[in-house]
Length: 199
Picture 1 (cartoon, rainbow, N blue to C red):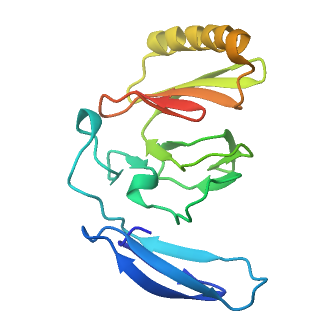
Picture 2: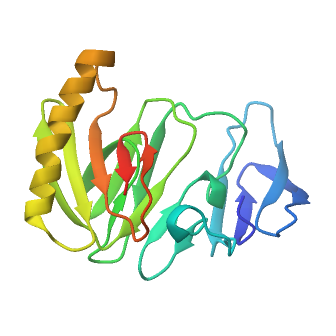
């Protein structure tokens, strides 16, 4: 877990077993109260990130007034060394902000949730003051998330996205996700995640 968090196990005892050399991650051993317990972790705090940057000057992770980018390398969620079978994540953000993650987006009473039953090896959370443009393409939601509103650019992307999904579905099989999103990034990247790309 990210070393900036205070972590508590609801139904077990946490033992710190290691801290990374850079002081950014802490490893724990958990002793459950009974063998049948489901592990429930609660954590909060301000995550710490490396000063190093990657592609296009993008930081390892960021939580700021400009936006949020979190993935496994920022240790924002518990890592158990196994892939995830499903995701159900609710996100509450400041007014005017929107979030993007893998899976299907649902909104209820101002709270956005992301869910998927597809296996995946990483959890992503991207958030900021995005302008979202979306439309359906059969059962797939296509969306474009821009930092500044540009309806002409969004429409150009949306028109091409459906064509590409159809083309590659004929070549390699049906598109497996509920959505495909193109998300504008503060840094020039080009990351491909399950069900969205961060440009």
